[in-house]
Length: 286
Image (cartoon, rainbow, N blue to C red):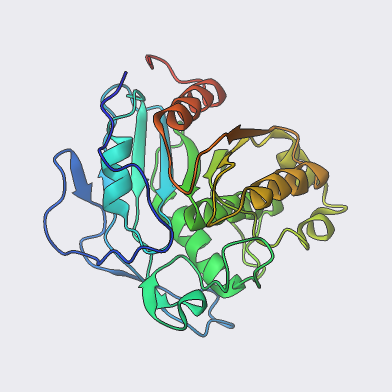
C-alpha cells in the first residue's frame, strides 16, 4: 500500500491561491517563468497565463509521461504530492497550474481554471478558445518527451474535462480551431469529470477514417462517485455513453457508491492498475 495524502478531496469550488513559494521534495518547476499562450494567431482573443508546473520524476525506468490536470480553483502542487505516493515508478508526472481567469460560475470572480464554465457539466456552453488553449498547453508539455516514451493525460473534475477534450483533439488530429494537434496520446484518465463538446463530437468524427482508427484504439478510464453533488454522477455516465456512441471502443467506466467530489484510495488503486495494464508498464506493484 502507498502512503495516502491526508486530504484527498479537491473540491471544485475551493479557491486555492497560487503560491510562489517552495514545493515538495522530489518535484521541480518545469516553467520557472509563466507561460503565455495565444491559440491560433488569426483567431486568438485571449492570452492565457499558465501558472507553476510541478514534475514528479520516475523512481524507476522511465516508460511513460502523464500530464495530470487539477480541478477548478486548485493548482498543480496538491496533485503532484498525491501522485508521488502512487506505486507507479515508471511514470513521470507533469502537473501544471491553470491560468487565473474570470469564471462565469463564480459571477466573474477570478480563479485557476483551464477554461471558462457556466456550470460543471457537459450541458454547459463550451469555451472552445479556453479548451484549445488548455489542450495546446498539454501538448506543449509533452512535446519534449523522448520518442520511445508513452504519453498520457488525466485529470480531476475540470481537469478531467480538459483531459477528455485533449483526447478528442488527438483522435480528430486537430484542435477545435482547426490547428493540427501534435501529441500522440496512449491513454486518457478522467475522475469526476465530463466530456466537453459531446453534442458535436459524433459529427466531427463522421467519415474521418484516421479519426475512427484512433477512436477505436485510445484507452479511456472514467471514474465517478455516485454521491458527487458538484459534477453529478449522471454527467459521468452520459460522457461514457457519448464516447461509446462516437466510436471509442476502449472506454472503462467505474462508479463508486457514496463517493462525493473527491478521490479515495480505492479509486486511485483502479487508476494504477488500469494505467499499468494499458501502458504496459514494468516494475509496478501495489
